[in-house]
Image 1 (tube, rainbow, N blue to C red):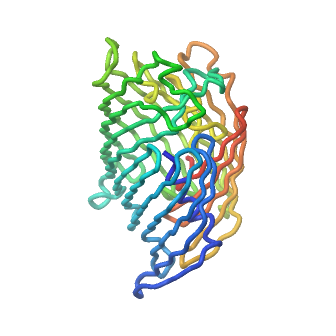
Image 2: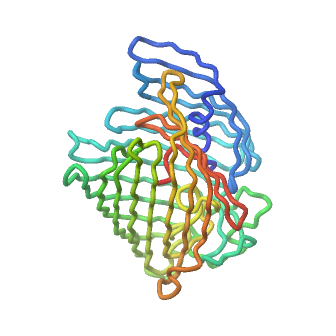
Length: 402
């Protein structure tokens, strides 16, 4: 589905083009303003439309809620209407609701609640459910050498529920258990000029759908000064996951395993006007008959930003991201304190079927540059452009990529 985050990024980055109307009691400020929505994505096509964000903030400029109805025309799927609501409380507690209906194929409804300081900060809780049909998903085949001209399209019809419960061992260390249920049905895609994945890759595991129950145990060590808009510290996570596919297509073992390590470190200058950020990520997947959409994936807004989503898929991946975040300026707009950053970056990554050979060569390298608007401590709006052998890609979101 065309990313909600890609639309709402404009709320942060294009406030300067809006017209403010404020009202409300003394304890809150309410601002709303229409802004144009014009964007492009390698996988999702071109958009043009209108967003009317409504921001509620405290007198000190702290954002407390964001409501954003929007109407968009997409070059691939027609007209889409979407209603978005985000509620922010103190200590990082958030509520998110999204409802969306598109002229062609796509649907979405999502509800999520998170509280990193549940019961006086002893626990972290994050629960969510969503149903969606994403008509612009891509598959190129498995492996790092899958050619661009093998691109196919499919619609992923999914229902997902996940429950995350974490126990703090101390202020910076947490153990989290995640249970998830994912039901997937693969249907004809919505991109007319691309072949259906099932026609080109009829034997790929997962075409017949999947019903997956997964359990992941995660160790977190996190010294960052903020979960959403950090300026210093590091984050280390390591996880092990057991998954079972109750809708397997053959006699393959329905059980498979995932293991991963993710390390992120911020190196700020004394003034924090420049912050070097380095991230390393390894994921390993073991088992037979694993659906292609459950395997390790490179490409997209969070790892290899010069390629479209899921450009490279295989059992294992290694990725390194380096970016320098430069503070450009800050201002108060519509009673909200906003900062702006520019961030040149380099992403390097590779997927593998086995680690028995060539682990450390033939990486894809994608340089690029990012632009960010930040409302501390709750919100980051970003646009990242990366260059690659496929021609490059543009992504936007409501968070940092890492």
